Amino acid sequence: MKYTLAVLVEDKPGVLTHVSALISRRAFNIVSIAAGYTEEPDITRITLVVDVDDQYELDQVVHQLSKLIDVIKITVLNDGESVQRELAMIKAASPPERRAEIINLVNIFRAHVVDVNKDTMIIELSGEESKIDALCELLREYGIKEIVRTGKIAVGRGAGTAKES
Image 1 (tube, rainbow, N blue to C red):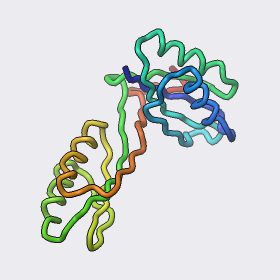
Image 2 (cartoon, rainbow, N blue to C red; image 1 turned 90 degrees about the vertical axis):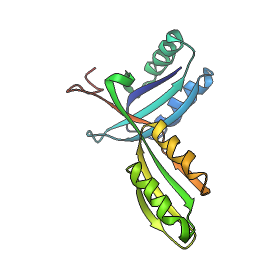
Image 3 (cartoon, rainbow, N blue to C red; image 1 turned 45 degrees about the vertical axis):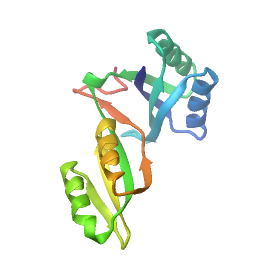
């Protein structure tokens, strides 16, 4: 099963490496990992999606991460209690005679065309993983040259924060 973790860490060189190495050493799979600065300049937020078999293994991941010196707080973000999104940029083949069709698809998914040239266009889309997968599947008919995805980021719903939970 896939679980999303918000891991607040001290903003120091090597922390992301320590987090990912610890999880891989324990033979757990990281599905996606995204890190970035937060509202506090000395704290980085790492959003991890891990694939584990059960609650016991999830507890093991959280327990092992909490042992790292630079880890401040770990929060498990459940689907219903958080907003989870991913960003994708898709470079699709776009012959001039089919461009209107592709733009119609882009509009249906509330995506944006961010670059166009003679043979390709770059489409930017944010949303749930299934939404991005659906657009990619439809664009395969036209030809996909390249896909870049960020991995999931997530924030809990309501007034509380990851640091307070």
